[in-house]
Image (cartoon, rainbow over all chains, first blue to last red):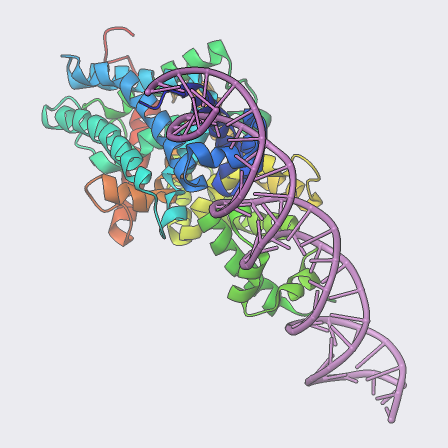
Length: 214
Length: 214
DNA sequence: GTAGCGTCCGACCGGTCGGTCGGGTAGGTT
DNA sequence: AACCTACCCGACCGACCGGTCGGACGCTAC
């Protein structure tokens, strides 16, 4: 079959880093080619267009994340534990590839770049994303119906969960500037994992409301 | 003094909508000018450069939000109630101007576009943002030291709070596609406000851990 | 009148954008 | 030898980029 993984993968790698840093519109193919050690024309031997390259990079990232989270979904555990493991996996995965969170956050609300002439690869990426979201959605629904979680609105909670996790790493550097403490680095990551699982654990577990009314 | 608020404000309005939709690099000045009903050259009569226009739009949005949240900060209430009011104000503010959340989310981790030659207006916007974040940070710190909140890491919690709130609206449309329920609209907003305050209220209030360990 | 001023615009600048094209090079097959 | 394929490149295309410039329009003030 097509037996050249080297150049193609190299292009994907550098493109992932660049798209994550400056977004789709902010990155020129010239820049990608230079970073990959190729001429600009050579990119078009491996990818049909800039849009296709971007979608393929996006799908790569999503797949990587989903494969990491897959065993958690299948684990035979009660919903609260499975949710914690899922959050931990997400946080670790985002921390492992620092570019991922930025690329993801951008992609999650930037896809309308392609309202006209969406490349066919976009559908694959969207499918991968929908699968991941559907997984955690199922965990939440299971927890709510089993009574382990408060009767929260599942879609809203999923949004909050993803937003809190992904945003944290996507904006960690600027956060460090404005806030006081370090938000990145090996030990800050484990701290973030703890904080986030703790927040959602306490926030979702069913029990009488501690606050009078509101 | 300079007595023409009309055109300038019109430019800011349309630029806000465009930057929110397609990002800084994705919007051309030609597009802004057309949307404002002006020639491209006329933009440079009101703004020195594209970067300055962007920063001024950003600062406008941040100021609008901060003014809305200001009374909450000053309210003589215990930390938990003040945090709830703050979240409610943020959610309502984001829902009120749908472009705001997208512009904000982009700006929050896209400022490195201006690492070289940052326009002086950027500093003002950053200052406004830092003030807002500092406000909610103080609420959290107060709640933690007073024992009302669990001893969470304040920077991490601020990040999660902002991420969960802003991301929700920034990506509401795509969320509606993948998730089931409606995430926007008058009644969905009030639901989101309830969900988010509820999540953080339950998640932050101090009390014994309901889960064995971990 | 005409001088000044704020506002706006068409034409234009150098440069970069995504993408095309024709050709070159290396290796494998026959 | 000839041929094919995979890979890569420099040169080039039209379109658009952010930004400049000289001048035109309408309006007050003198």
